[in-house]
Image 1 (cartoon, one colour):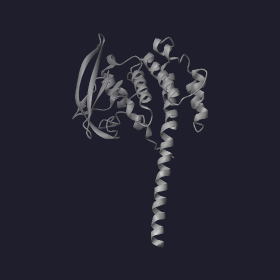
Image 2 (tube, helix red, strand yellow):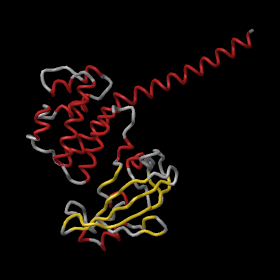
Image 3 (cartoon, one colour):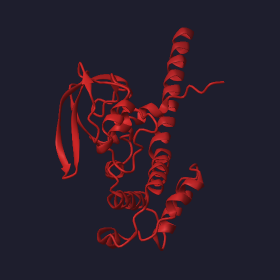
Image 4 (cartoon, helix red, strand yellow):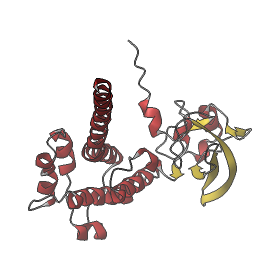
Length: 259
């Protein structure tokens, strides 16, 4: 049976040439228009193109940067992006496939403001959300040192907020297994494989940066752990509360009828 799970779309900015996920009003698949655009010199050798996108629902505007000169008609981006890439090979970064494979519109951008912050549930502590958001932005721009620092700091802040105990940071992270036994211990083990987590070294940046695949693994693992700690319990509580209210309503109705 074909898999119709489309949840990955919520992690995108641009769903297609007409719709996107607005980071301001958090409405998915809402129509947008290109409010403004332009070109500037990213470096002496490379041009960069900025696009200001306006949400059709809340009228808020977001900034998006691309090395591709994305064509647009009637305020919408023209597709397919693969054709755009063929015309703009000189502006393609080294770590992006040039014209070998078609790419989705969302992949034609390397930076967004706001970033993908809108996919992180607001029940997660703000300081951690902001650090993950910054890390994802740095990763998209291939700033691995900055992304590494943000993720180390985010995990450190989690151990502080959760009042984790232990002689070192690895033991503090692993103590989450006892505090939250419902979490898959494998996720905690992934996060615990972090070295040089002291705040002094974070500020001095005297540690080796993670590569892109490692950063992606750490980011997604941390998101899963945060969801298990802060989001899922609240959802369960909400479901239980809803059932309790329905039960109470029925009980009151029966009592009234019996009287």
